[in-house]
Length: 298
Image 1 (cartoon, rainbow, N blue to C red):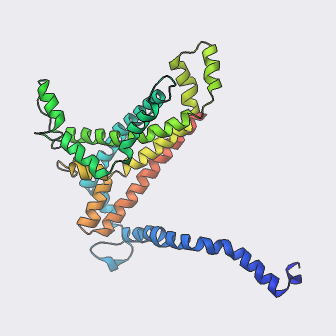
Image 2 (cartoon, rainbow, N blue to C red):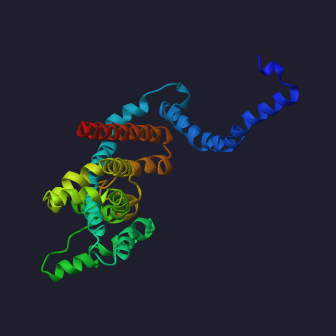
Image 3 (cartoon, rainbow, N blue to C red):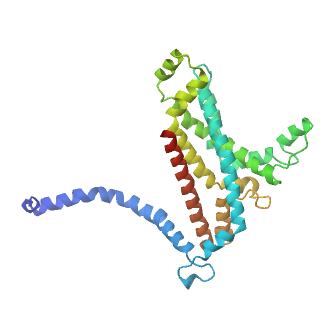
């Protein structure tokens, strides 16, 4: 009724005013649709098309192949191994460093924080080069030190288990400082009155950590756990650059297998199925972590 009282010029003005926000959003929506939404839908469609007979319509061949693929199984086991060993180690070290670097009695705290954060902004190629030099079987610094102590050289990058632990070391070195900074920010938001009240009650450092620090940082710990889990399940750079997924696929990750299948073997349909399997695995792990965190709060 009210709009019927408006003049044509006023109605046009109202329409322009309503459309203006959407016009500003349109470029971002177009970019999102072209470069994000369309590839997601297209890859889902590809995963349900047979590689050998693309015109056969809907097919589950790629997913049947995935369940029987021993290489994918090995890549999954390798990735879970990194997840189980590397994420707790990385987050535990990050928490210890954050607590130490948050201490008021420590001098040069800013310099130490910068030093520990530097690996997170170091180029991946440089990280791989440094670790390849350090872990070289014949001329690496680590084997040189071990030989000086009377220990035989370890084939860090050419034997299965040493190569796996080399990856754990490299990933931990690179990302511990990143999580440490997040923990530091969270630590500094905890009211000091809580610690002062605990001290008055006679609580020691360990008791204050478990009774105050950990509960207050629970959302941050959950965030870093989920981010680190997703990052590890998608790990590509370190296995590819440091060990070339060897020896004998012992350090092959799911993301490296996806890259190899799509861009080296040109099997885009099967690579799409691998990608969606990764999405499902990441979603399951993330959901489990949220459920466990919710139980802890209850």
